[in-house]
Amino acid sequence: MKQMIKGLRSLSTLLTPKVNSEEWIQGSARGIRSLLPSGGGQCVTCLEPQARFGLCTPCRQDLPANHWHCRCCALPLAYAGNEVLCGQCLQDPPPFTRVIAPWRYRFPVDGMIQRYKYNGQRAFARPLIHDLAENLMSVLETAPEQRPDLLVASPMHPARRRKRGFNQAADIAEHISRRSGIPWSADLVIRSRRTRPQRGLNREERLANLRGIYRVTRPPPASIAIVDDVVTTGATARSLTEALLDAGAREVQIWALARTPG
Ligand SMILES: [Zn+2]
Ligand SMILES: [Zn+2]
Image (cartoon, rainbow, N blue to C red; front, side, top):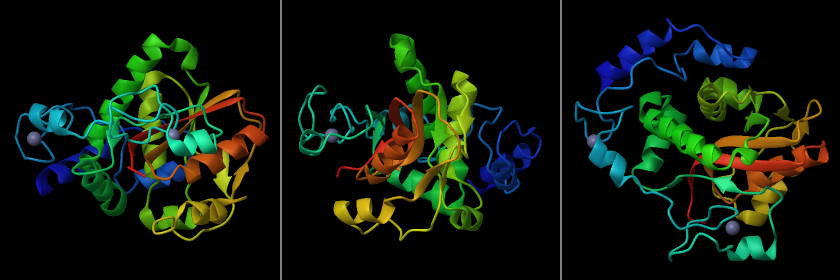
């Protein structure tokens, strides 16, 4: 495993950065690159040598797919049905049109995302990022009218990004952009101040914590997809969407790897 990550790191320095963000180029110097030339490699969860984009077939089939979910916020549901709205969306309809998140945030997806986010081990997220992009391509093929004009990476406060060395949302947005041809931006929306970490706060506290922190730096196009790693309570998605709608966007959707159960 260690060997493989080292291999990925050295390969990454050979790639030409084709990105539209100064910050991102600094991030890539630490070796976190979006697209790697090889589709093979060992399975990151069981170490099986025959893997596609870092997962063997049985491990890929075992990922917790978010089959039944709220049709707006993608909240996992315990019963069959995808045309239902959850209680939260009925009571307080979100400003975004929908969330696409193929997996539930639980084992092993939670661990794969955490290793990527907190330890910079991108190999663990590679299969998820790759499969998300493929999933989105088939969504857009059947519903081309839902293709957004721009992907917006969920912004991180610059101090936090410097500490982590990269913004995982920008990494995911860049990959989807390459696959789909939809342009992406890391600086259309910026975080104007630092907040308490959202973990451990309830929904009201999260919304209050985020109020007024996003600033849209220029007029946005009509249709936008915000890209993030995980959608938790949807508080970040709501605040970001409101900022974009206030600035003139007409429709905002959210694309993420995973959705938490609540
Ligand atoms: Zn496996
Ligand atoms: Zn919902």
